[in-house]
Amino acid sequence: MDPDIGIRAAIEEHWRASELGDIDGEHAVCAEDAILDYPQSGERFWGRASISAQRGGHPSDRHFVLRRIVGSGDLLVSECVITYDGAPTVSVSVMECAHGQVVHETQYFADPFVAPDSRSEYAQPMPRGGVTEA
Image (cartoon, rainbow, N blue to C red; front, side):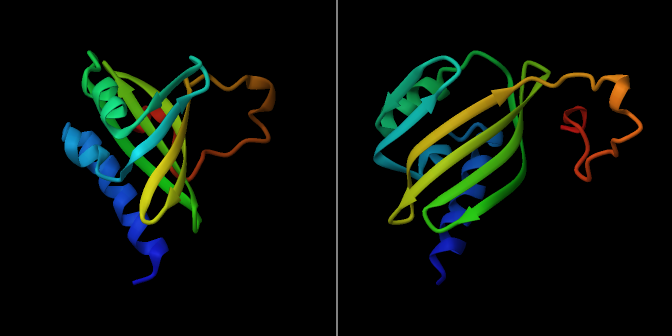
């Protein structure tokens, strides 16, 4: 099997399990010694157990809508909308992979914003729509 297909399927399953609240399934793609970075808060989590514990203890009602996965080989990027207690946030997750597992994930979060009228004549709706569709 093409290794890109295998790791992409595992990452898709990661996001499906995240939506279902399946903590074990969510982290099955992570290497035992994986690293998770949140640059905006300056936090780093070492190891699958630590990553799983911090995500599993999240107090919010969370939902995940995967928009797409791009990249190939050892670097794949997931774009998704994560909704925390009804408030959508766009997330980009950069996943570095080795041997069919994620070894380093860096996740960025961005809140939605209203586009200014000054550029409306140049803009078109995104094909996948805005975050309000999540």
